[in-house]
Image 1: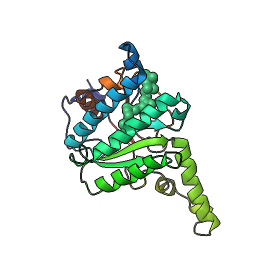
Image 2: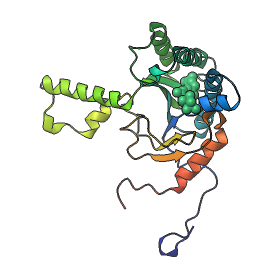
Image 3: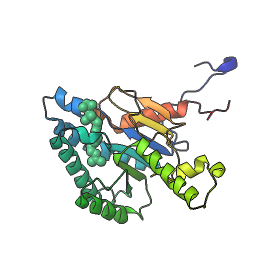
Image 4: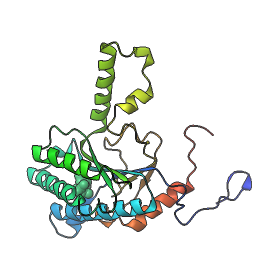
Length: 249
Ligand code: FPP
């Protein structure tokens, strides 16, 4: 592609491991449609989606990506039929339990982000157990967004700041963007650089509203269970071929 002033922009065709996105967000969409296309129940799509997730995280970890956040269950997903909600929670539970055997062996740090108090006590206990079990791993940090909503996360951050103002620890004029960042579930983690959404939908759906401010968005028509490590590499190559300016020139 000819760049400005006739300069040739060289398009990369392979992942440059020295220029990886630090943090990738995944909106794993299309499990239901994947199942429907095959005449299977929606649960089969979610099961296939969970398998896809393992492969993608392994690939990202092997490449050297430092953070991944995956949207597993939103605050709005409770409105799905109880059977589907239960199935998704069951899959999450299996994932967390098996993480000790599989992903921990692959050096993945697992964390859950989202509001926990609405989850079953068993799930809350398992989250803590898996987080503790994997916390000293040195590979990719995988945030599993469960009962997560971006607006709820921002409301939470606002409450924490308001509390500080009320206690006299902070003046209103001194509130910064950093204070908001520190009140998020992802405090101390870099912003999302690359956001991937599958299944042809082009929406944020209340996912990491603050953290994606400067993210490159990458959409594909592929349904999440069909999303393969090669697709992840393609998304990263596209990311690396884009020029990020962060509002500069
Ligand atoms: C959206 O697709 C997907 C979800 C609401 C759930 C995502 C969950 C997984 C990929 C597997 C479980 C995750 C873990 C961490 C074990 P959809 O079902 O709404 O698809 P549709 O739009 O085609 O109906």
